[in-house]
Image (cartoon, rainbow, N blue to C red; front, side, top):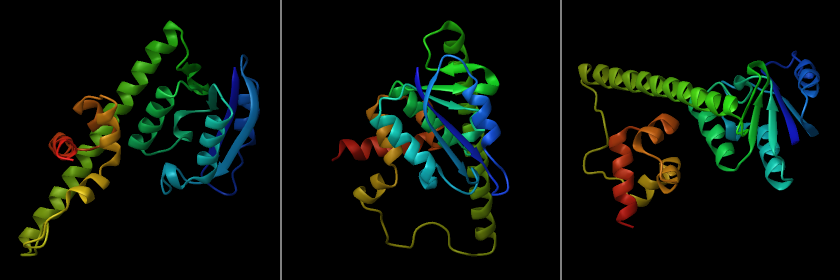
Length: 206
């Protein structure tokens, strides 16, 4: 299977060589290129990680069938972003081999199909909990501002244009167009069902 290796460590003094060496020993994969970077998965988003983006472009342009990683956390520490990336790979028919679990997501075997559903479900639940926790912190902050007599929400007599509103929710639009359910979109993007409904209504008005 034509593949690439992607490795990541968070600190400059660390090395990815051990990850690379271990992944090269995995049987059944023809590794054509290795992508390695020293960057934090906490402080940098998927879009800000140049080597990761270079790898994804290479995979697209060279008909790569599989990406080899040592563990899921190498893709990122942000659950929503990692889940979104995994979904995109799945939609493009690109397998993801996770060495520490000994599975290949996207491979057409019963074992891997079971693990694929399990991992997506777990990540979706973690993403939902992160979203609920963020929502709680935001609401708590608003309550504190109100208690201090400070203004919350938009300025009086202000409104948000349809185009600007839709531009803020491109990921929601993407998954609505793919036919995903509200529950799936909420898990992947962290967007509340009420907001997803507003996006869908705004799309229909276009």
